[in-house]
Length: 461
Image 1 (cartoon, one colour):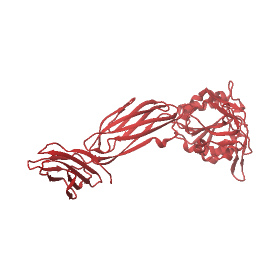
Image 2: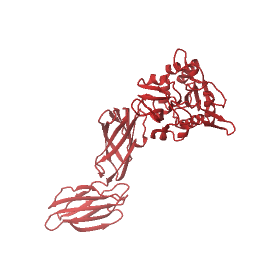
Image 3: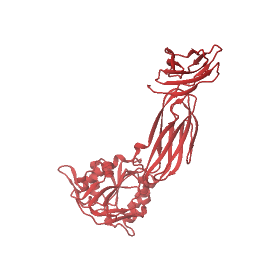
Image 4: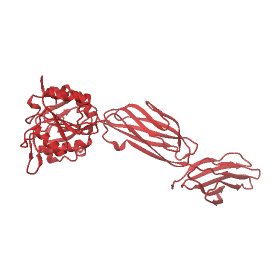
C-alpha cells in the first residue's frame, strides 16, 4: 500500500526554463525532472507509463514561466509521455476514466497556481474552478496513491488535500534559499539535490495533521505555529495521503532448544507496531520447514489457519502494542532446522527490513533405549536420523570413562555394570552432523528405568 508522493509549496514551475543549446532543463524545471525521475521507479500501481497533467495544456515553450511547458520538458527528459487535462470539465473526465480503468497513468501531476497555464487560470476554489474539480475528486487521488500511484503537486492550491485531511492547513507566506532536506527527504528521493529545491522561491508550507505523509523539506528561516522549521515539501517514497504509517516488525523464538526427534517444539512469533499510526489487518505468515510436522497454532488475538504454511491474523495492533502467535510442531528428523516468518499490514510501512525473522534450532537424533539383562549388561540402541549417523560413543560409569567406540554408523553399545550393582551410567554419542547427545541412567540391580535424555550440546554442522 502507498505510492511515491511530493507535495510542495514551491513556485518552481514558474522559475525554470529549457536551455536548447545545452538540451537541458535548468533551475525549477530541472527540479521537476529529477522529482519525476525519483518518483517514477517507485510506482507500483499498474500503468501505461504516462503522466496525467491536471490544470495545464501542452506547450513546448522553453523560455520559462509556463506550467504546461515545464511538465512537457521535464517529462521528456525523464522518458515519459504526458496527457493534459486543462479545465474543470477535463479534470472531471480524467477522474471518471481513472475510475473505470480507461486511463492508467504512472504519475498524476497537479500544475500548481503561481505560473501561467496552471490551476490559477480558473482559481483554486469556487464553482466551476479546476481547484473545485480536484476537491470533488480528492478521494480518487487518495485511492490512486494508496494503490501505489505517483503524485507530484506545487504551489498553494491544496484545498483538495484539506478535504482529505481536515486537520491539515496550508499557510501562505514563504522565502527563498533557505530549504533543506530532512533525513526522510534525503532517503526517499536521493536524486533531488538541495540546489534543486532552492532553484526558486517558495510560497506556502504545511501544518497540522498531514496524515501518512512525511516532512521531506523544511525552511530554516520560517517557523510554524509550533516553533518548528516550516514544512515546505511533504510526501515520501511509499506513503498514503490519509493513512498514517505503521512500522510493523516481527520477532521469532523457539523452545525448547535443543529439541528432539519425536518431541514437540514451539515457535513464538511476536508482531509489534512502532507506529506512528495503528496497523490494521496485521498478518503473519510462517512456511514450516521440511522435517517438522504441524501440531497446533494459537494467537493472543485473532486466529491462525493452515498446516504447512501457518497464517495468523491479528486484526488491528495499536501504536506501541504487539500480538503473539504460538505454533507447535513435532520434529521428524535430526539436524539444524531454520524457520522464517514474515509480517504485513495494510498501512504504508517505512521500514521493511524488520518484517521478516528467522530462528535456527538443533534437533537431536532421538531417544536412546536401554535394556538390561540378569548379568547386568546394559545395551543402548542409538537411533539416528536420515541425514546423520553416530560416529563415536563414550561411556562413563560413576563419572569415570569406561568405554570408547568409534565407527561410521554405530547403532548400539553395551557395558557391564559394576560389581556393587548400584551406579550411574552416562552415554555421550557424537554424530556426523556435529550433534552431541548425552543420556544418563541410574541403576540398581536389573532396573528397567529408561535413560533420561538431556539434549544436544554443540552444533558443528
